[in-house]
Structure formats: structure tokens, C-alpha cells
Length: 233
Figure: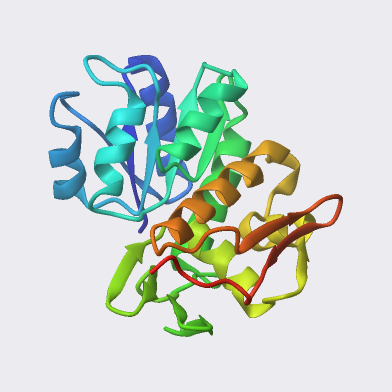
């Protein structure tokens, strides 16, 4: 049974979410104290987190960053804040998706199932434990690591999926729709700006290896990871 941690201070919504998730065979758990979210996360060890933005004391972005320091489990923001910048901030802070309130429970369920499949199920990146190599850059899909020499950079599931596709087709353009299809099952619910945010995050991970300008935008077509780069070292 998949475990879902709910970080939400709306008592009525929490009750409805718990009932709905129980109905579909999940094990929900709601945080008891908003001062100890990370401790409760570690104790419960959820497979996925539903996280609000507006929380007492620290906001959801803060807790998302804290969770990302110790886990790559999927994080879904569920918030009444529907501005594009709120969604961008969520993704920039490590979230995998963003749902605005009020929402359709079936959409929430579909997004939960999609993230669980990607992280743990038939589409999981770590199911076979493989690596992808371009020049001396190695993507360890199982460990969610990007290695160059002795240096390792940690990746989220989504970042690893994007890099896997780009590295497998190095020096070839990968269309935006193909990347979206590799990442999400329910593309109808994905804002087009979301992919832009993830591409930015992937570029930042490459930059941590002193690889700059390797991931290029091909206007009107998609993205290309060139093999003609060299590090600054």
C-alpha cells in the first residue's frame, strides 16, 4: 500500500482527502505539527507528499526544500494560489507537480497515480538500474546521480527522466512533446511553462559540473544536448 503524507492545515479538506485516498487503497497520514514536518516525514516514510503552500510558521516551499535534502520522493503541491509564479517557485524548490484549489478529486488521483508509476511502478527510472554516458558525463538512472569524474550531483526523478532522453539522443533535437510524454501521462493538465522550468533546473545541474551551453534550445522544435562541450576545468 502506497503511503501519502498530507501537509495541509485546512481540517475539512484534510478529512475529505483522507477519506478519498483510503477509498482508493492508499494509506494517508496528515502531519500533526507544522513545526516538525520533516521529522514526521522521516518517521512515516511516505511514497509521495501532498503539500500546501500557505502553512503556519514556514511555507510549503521551505518544507519542500527540506524534504529534497533527504529524499527524491514525488512532491505534489496542492494550493489555492494559482499565479504562474507560485507554480514556478514550487518547481524551482523541488516539486514534481502543482494542483490548484478548488480541484477535481479525480484529477488529484490521476496525478498521484502518474507520479507513483514514474517513481516506483512500471515506468520507474530505477527499475533496471542502468546508466547513460555522453563523453565523460554519466547519468546513473538508478541512483539519480549525474557524475563527472569523482564529482556527483543529485537529481530529482523528473530531472533524471529529462536527461535520460536528451543523453540517449545526444546531438539530436528532442521535441517538447516527446519530453512531456516521457515525464507526464496526463499532458492535458500540464502547463507548458512547466517544462521550461525543468529545463532550467537541468541546466543548473549541468553547470554544477562546469558544463555550460551544452543544453541548447532549438526554437520551434525542442532541445538538443550537444556533445561538443568541454568543462571549465
